[in-house]
Amino acid sequence: MTDRSISLLSVLLLAGGGCVASDSVDTAVSALKNCTAEQGQRLIDAGRYTDAVREFTCVIGAQPTEVEGYRGRIEAELLLGRFSNAVSDYGRVTALVLPVHADAASTILAGYADRLALAPENIPALTGASFARWWFFQYAQGIQLLDQLLDVQPDDVYGNLFRGSSRLLLGATPAAGVADLERAIELAPTSADVRYVVADAYTYGQPDPDRAFAEATFALNGGLDTPRVHAILAGAQLAFGELVAAATHIEHHIDLVTTELVTASPLATGASLALDLVPGRTYELPIPAIAGETISITTGPSVEIWDTIAVLLAPDGSPVVGSDDAKQYYAAFDWVATATGTYRLHVTSFESVGTGALPVTRR
Image (cartoon, rainbow, N blue to C red; front, side):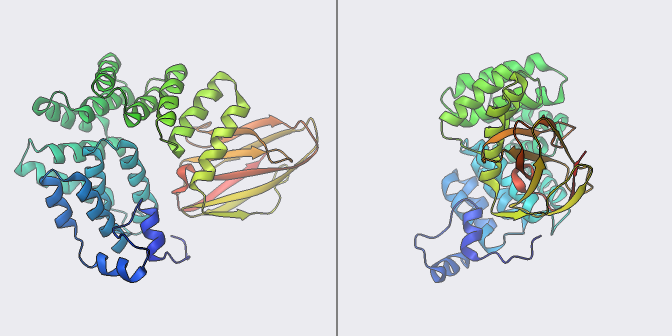
């Protein structure tokens, strides 16, 4: 983690909201003393999901590097249909919890296994457990749990949506996955969150840039102005050959996740830099070039950072080319400079949640 201190209020902002009504730090501290994960889970079990979100947000504020607050808030968000928020919270687990507790994933899964052993048809536990499997790329295990959930509650929007997503991402039964996704849209036709997950499935599971672009546009217009939605839109526009439009979305993705912009030394042809990434940190690398010169950039590989995103800005500051998942999960591009001057490369981990050293090379 970064050595920069995180204030109480900044933690609450990072967590997506506070558990207090005033701006007073004293009031916030007082409120934090009274919230617990156990109370949050009781609120979920009582069907009071919005109250549970508030309770778990308070827990996160008090313990920002512990997993249980995020785990509980994710579960409540899923039950409210706030699927994008739940995905973002797992990103926070990556950024804040995993550097301190490398076993956070196994802790989450073990907790759900214990709950389901006691109550195999418990909807909140099936929801949270299947989503954890989805997030950790364990799609086959997730589908088993989603089958159980849909046996109990056949018209569950979450169950249909994430079984469809998991089937497409696994690649085993794509036709059934498509049917599940369509059923989820039928059940919640106006949900931006549903359309976002559908767009994700048609980006990373069964690639269909036209469908991904349409669904992500629906999500964006529905209020999900999120880094992941912009990454999906960028991926579709890269497939369409619309480089500037894609770069614009990637620039917006990076702007949304950056809390610290660090200027590095200029990167000459044939040179490489090791960037020290922490959550929220984006590096700006000056790239001197002459008109007609090919600017070739690669990121990674890295033992610690496995997913990167980058955008190149022209001397006038406009985005000209961006990259996400060009080589496996690493950003890379070749672009011919249209003017002589100093370009600027902005690069970070995807959603800027990674901690570690990232090599960036100009070939």
